[in-house]
Figure 1: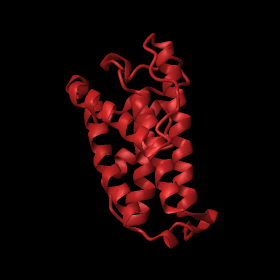
Figure 2: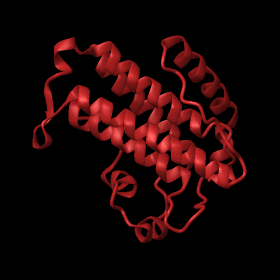
Figure 3: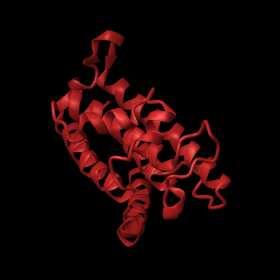
Figure 4: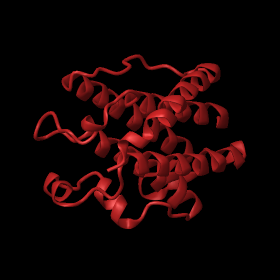
Length: 189
């Protein structure tokens, strides 16, 4: 149970990261339709979900402030988003998430198998394993949105969901890390 839950989340994470690999700095904050969010907002929204479950709820550790969590939460209006200055540059957002991700996956690796079927959110009777599945599905849904946004912007990115096996995940993550290392300074505001 533990291994499959972690592997699913890792595969979803690498696909989310890969969905914006190769994006240009001028594209991260563009909205292709008035009702659509930007790539940077979508990425932050996913990152905050991971943080809320695996850092704040599971470990009582806050790495993203309440203001950051509000800016990227579901239900924040387009007007609120447009009137506020984004809390991070895209570079800072991604780098902050990489710290959140390390903390979250380290926590998951430290748990025994029997922790995964335990109820994490009693109000919806959701176990830790189900929360990880929900995050993974959330990531993959938004990865698809990012792919479509990038097509609309004329800079299509990867479209195939990969990384389902550990070797593939590691290969994709290595390629993404190489791109991010070379490109991240261009995303400073």
